[in-house]
Image (tube, rainbow, N blue to C red; front, side, top):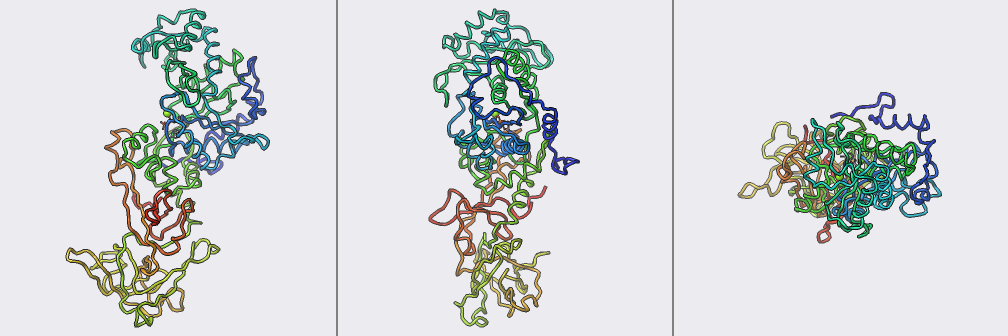
Length: 601
Ligand code: ATP
Ligand code: MG
């Protein structure tokens, strides 16, 4: 799918810009007023004195590592805040204690920092005195959420339902049938309040009762048929410990979190569209009761990011990790931000990809190739080049001593670090009688369109000399052991007349004398299916997504460091040093992307 382009700006479409500009023009949030009970003092203390400011939030549930889809949401929320002089809150939506862990909180924090948005968590120059300004936990609002629930009960807007889960399902109705009222729906506010307090005090068993909003069991929108607000769950929470045995439902908690933080534009994916009426209902009621400021935040939905051959579901990604189909959350094949980073993706590339994919209300699948294209487009101007032979076979220049004086003599070669950036300087390496070349650069008989090594053909060793292939040696099984060639005199790159002998092939190589042994890992798609996620997860997996090469690199790569910029291995694509693996001092490189979209459609 090709993302749509905005007619005015020429940029990829982002309808949310229009929404925000319109709101700013009309001063919608400038008039925001608190009611009688201005929530927790904490929210005023945290630099919220400017209610007109655009405030977005990124609200992950800390139940797994973030993935490429979250990058889109992070990019969108933080960039909109940046563009309109606002702030973006990082909020951990931790209302589900059984599935959440500190490890995930830490990894999410790392991902946001890595993407470069840490500073946009700060409100204004005087505010960021703490390390993590505008970082919030939904669980910090549990007291407020509880008070708000008691308010709803007192106002006759919520009730404790003690039907069994089966009975509740049975009375909810479906798309064609309205629901029917619970026998508990008519309880008095006093009775409900007493019962809710018993829930909180642990006097009822898990699952014995829930608190529900009292809205309309016949609503055509099933989400409005008295949705659950609180459930009983005896679980230890990573933040609040055992303080609570009742926990708010996500649909109840989320609007309140937005309201307390004075979010202006609450951006969600389209699955939440049907929840919007409840979002508005709840915040209207709480504003009427003076519990939150008015006007309250609004929810806007956009189509989630889907990338071909990629799964974007924390649950399914967790399955891959737990069942050891991949080597952890940061396996370079994983579409997690930790995996993409280890693979060699940069924040710049991911942001460019997010920008190019647009923000619309109609979904689609973005081709994986456009992720790779964004990486190439951002790395190409700066990435140092290097020659690396991935599948090495020895090439012997048999007449080297005759022309160069001695078999052991080495000649100096130079090449630009980056031909697009002359200031980056030159790299230096040797050429000698024996060099490593790619196994696939030799054929006994010339295939159609093949201009590299075959007996009788001349090619240039890039940045070195032109050679003429004379033959090759194979073992009894036919395996190529060695290729032989002779030097074509006076053809050294950079010397006068070097190009007098025209050749059609130009191959990469490294001299055996100064080659650095390295391990190179090439990755294929983790999922063979183009649109994975609909079928059985394991059937969709590509069983051969990792290929390891014992390669040889030019000497400039001996200094390559973990965390350094990516390299372009000439002909092979973009690579980085793997953050974790370094076997017996031998550096390991991951291929982030090939030179072009070789995998086609
Ligand atoms: P998952 O199903 O992978 O757990 P989620 O949406 O449940 O994803 P959250 O932690 O709730 O995960 O997501 C945080 C934010 O990221 C939400 O605002 C959500 O809308 C957004 N988000 C998640 N996946 C995508 C996606 N593929 N494209 C755009 N935004 C996404
Ligand atoms: Mg989720």
